[in-house]
Length: 485
Image (cartoon, rainbow, N blue to C red):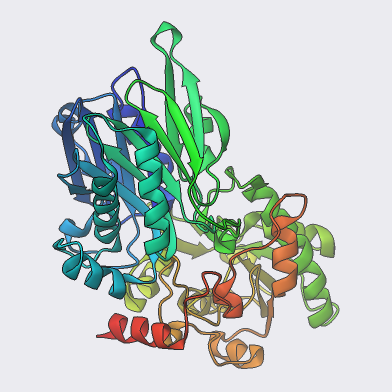
């Protein structure tokens, strides 16, 4: 999971990109980078840490140009501590290409071999984004004819890229002196949305970003989502071209975007994240009624912030009082995207404080958006008991996460998933709660896609079914061995 943005404007773009990355900070806190183009000259700055810490005045002044892109990173491949693995990535031919990527490639072994033996390209990192920018550069080089870059040449290159690359990828590339290119994998697993605004007589400013919240907060008109398999090319003068570049595209977006990753005020693939989370709460309430004894719950409490909409609906449907018992320290990052169990455990108590007056002597039902490793959930149950709760019912608005996620979320190994190989009663004992209730898989999908044109979701971490069709036991074993080595 990362956040990406690209802008083409009649005006300088550095500030627009910086502001957009601040709105996408929830999607990545490890590092950030911005690249701009002034004619054919590319300027770039990237650094570890969050957006507000990474750019000084002198950095922003050096990012000149009227087209550019930016990235916030949450590490899923490579080393979070290595600044050289931060995005964007750059290759100097053809034209000079800078690329940012949200997702995860699943055929990195094959691509690495092909790039070295067939394409004669050298890689400096373990990042799959470096693989992507080299594949794009190689395929674009094969299409270049004449002095100027033609949009059809770009789209022909993306067609070949789709044939070579497997996995999830929403990408934005800056091509020096030419324009900005955006494209999405044939399943549309990771989100990408197009927007625009008119800059008076100067012309149109175009933006492509991971979430609609970026567009809406910066006064852009939301044009539409980039379609699965589609490529969009915006020239430096603001002309927009698009083409479907995949043979059999089908929209199967990631369910975890709606459960946890995205901001609630975003709309993705025509689905309001906030309304989807309300519907998750409606469905969860029915399951709670089914599996918990009558009178076992006095109060419903969310784990702030992403579970709040679901918790409100649970309380409403059950007719039980809704209370805010946990206070969140907003200066601590999202514990789910922190590397290492120990760091996550320590950060829970720094992030959340239980107010004893809300818990003492009560049978508390806690609603969380999901339970992944169990570290945070176990700590929260302990905090709830220490605050004086009589009993603790722990509920998840998502089903049990039983399988590795290989499409851009840091859940690569089964051994770190608390639900892997365990029954729900066994997980309940691991967490230390009195009762444990999960959302049903069918209910989750129905709640998210209700009222939309989306027919299916990428739910591999819940079901073990990988939509790209090329992820098998051998690959999962390789990922796990590589992660643990």
